[in-house]
Image 1: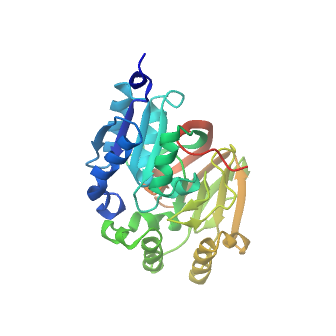
Image 2: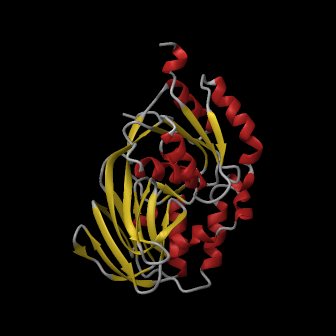
Length: 314
């Protein structure tokens, strides 16, 4: 067997519209960088929502054992769901070269800069990470299963990310989300949730309920400090009946590393299972993407993915 035969069969999935469309101009440079790292990738560009999912499934069916997603958290979300839906978490590695708006997964795994991600790929580094699993409903009320790497959330806070227009994403990693926070504060901010965390009934009026597998969301906002992607339990944040000033203070606390968890009305739990429904139709945000609708059950799949990233420090 030659050295070429032993090389991973790498599939380079590029979302040209990520990063407000900036990735489109970088596609050629990204492919060239992967080739300089010693790989001969097959390259495909996504053209519409869930195209990355279909392309990833086809690549795995064709024998590719390494998927590298170039884009943001949404691109990774589609690739990860394809891998897990095929039951390929043991035989396929997932990586990223972060070029999107949020890039929170890459940042949490120590590869937030493209150079760091390329270095991990070239060195063959690998880290087993958990994935969240959510059973929820699609737009027609039919059952659906999705997986997430960062977070699953419902209520007012996650609806912010869904409201960010593509053109605004050119403003940077965090600024688009902060701008939309101000805009969304003009409407209603709470709803009733029927909520159980590991069987404990915590139903009440909430701004939002969010379940986290990693520390960040919204581009550099530390929402769940200490949340690790390989420790099995998930981190649940209950955002109580918060007024506008409290919401602004909570945003500021996330920018300061997570001090919002010290605020009255915000509670943090470690949990293996969360069930929730809401008093009105509520979209569920998964890694910044629209995943479906409540009611939902959230659980964790330990060690679900082989991710191309350095091992955890220490």
